[in-house]
Image (tube, rainbow, N blue to C red):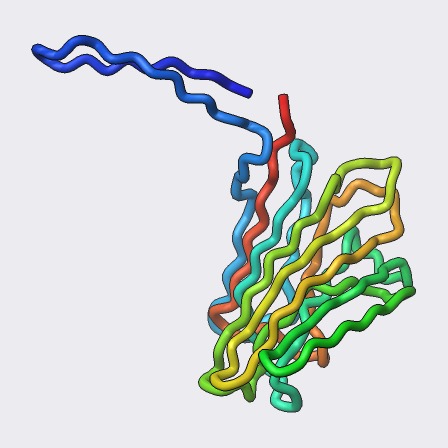
Length: 198
């Protein structure tokens, strides 16, 4: 914890002092932002991720070009690992009913839901993915994800927990999407680093 002392002095006013307790742990710093412009792109690719943080956070605002479904999924992979090393459990609600599902031994993990090309008015969805202890080389990696998309009268919200069964430090994240399509122009992904405590 960093503690800083401030003084305020104005003409004719006695100097006032106060303490600002700034907690460094948990502070979020932007690492990189990727915005798709022009032609659709199959995925976001963050490479050479700094190994100076405790955790990572990905924030996505996205829609893809699929016209066969209304809702698609983000499907992250780490360090170009396309092996069956990913597992996830998802709880989902659509305003009418709740459901859950799980899957193991997949070649990607689950990164939330967002709108597809035939979604009403082309509405984008958003997802927040926390990647915990990403540089630790003695344990598997855990992800927590929250996401949602509004489809004007319907939609989807979900929360999930995932595991990447690897002890490698994460230095690259590729965020694809389901149904073999591409992210449309205007889709955005931002990667943040979460500071560790001093």
